[in-house]
Amino acid sequence: MKLDAKHLATIEVIRREGGLTRAALALGTSQPALSRLVSDLEIRLDAPIFDRSARPWSLTKLGASLAMQGASILRAQELAGREVQEFRSGTKGMLRIAGPPFFTDGVISRLLPTFRDRHGSVSFAVSYGYGGELKDAVRHGRADLAIFPRGVGEIDEDLAFTPLIEAHNVVACRAGHPILKLAFPRPLALLDYGWIVPPEGSPLAADLEMVLSELEMQEAEVVFEGGSLASVLSFLEGSDCLTVLPGTTVAEIGSQFGIQAVPIQVRTPRRSIGILSRSVRELDNTSRTFVRFLEDHFRYAGSAEPLA
Image 1: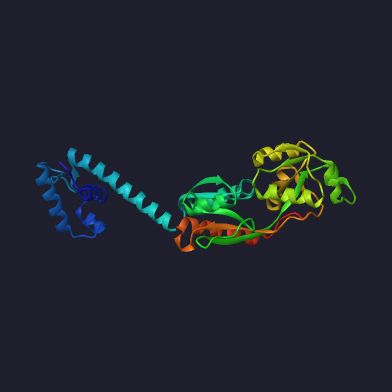
Image 2 (image 1 turned 180 degrees about the vertical axis):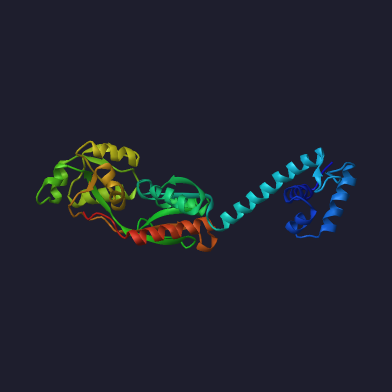
């Protein structure tokens, strides 16, 4: 026999409220209507749900079992309502973020726990890419948002760009590096050391080529190539090699990992780093909340990049 979930929940409300009068008030109905519902249900079941000889009514063994099922239904309804409310307010759901790996790992990923603490039970899925890969991830729904360095590529008409910060890449080294001890370090001093080459196809790799070209250096001494941000930082910290890193990343985690920007002026393009998305009107509330969170963070943080 199939029972209406609403009837099971009603039995639990009567038990919880201790009688028909208070239960009717809680359910927004009248006591006679609630009494008829119980009587009709007992006729259908051909068994009593309440022991009417007691005052207030007490549940029979069958009634207690049905009330237990009703309690589960009420809990599920409450949780579902909370889920909907959190989703509408942007404090619940899965947020898929794509971005260039070094900036995403060094800056954005460090902000995710703070966002979750402030805005509820949001989960994150982070992926990596550059330029066209990031556009395709957003366009084809593999990412809700992408951290995008504008200047690497134009923004297509079907996508929206929300600027966050003006940034540039810098030449970086370990703290205590010999080049930092020079009284007046000049660009040619960069030629005396080996290089960690960023991942192929990245803006970092393009900027390294620009630096070497400016120094009229045909080929760098490559000591370490590619790798994750963690592996590059580990190698950089333990060697006299140089590399190119996002200035914002150096400012964010440099002191933690013993990394500094080399105080030599080199020509790297400034880029507007922002959020790439489909039309802003198409964003769900969780994505909108995250965009506002990042805007506020970078507005109050300002440009904390080291000067190089």
